[in-house]
Image (tube, rainbow, N blue to C red):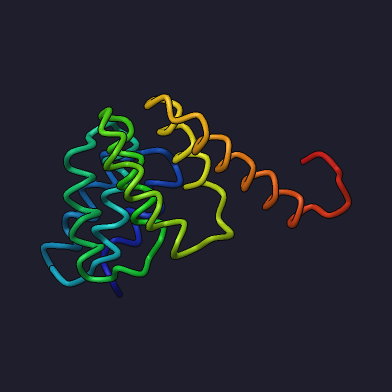
Length: 142
């Protein structure tokens, strides 16, 4: 049985410090288990330990540079730290990897807003609206 499963359960319960401990144990047993880094990074993000989260997400990206959620989460950490250009870079990669996910689009729009880049912000928000229309063709409010 792979370690870290309890960590995922702890995350679902909002017990992120316990999750961090469990994922750390999993990493100590198998340093190549990159999803433990992704999940521990998510818990670090939830408790506001953004630099530690960035370290974990960066390791995971080096192992699998095609997992868009990792770029999105690392970008969010940069956003929280006020490093908006780095955040935009990561959100852009996440969007390129998964163009139908509106989460990095909304987050990149917020980064553009912080930088006063109105045109770019409006373009991203327009794309978010397009995605919502594609996913909800009846026009019903979600």
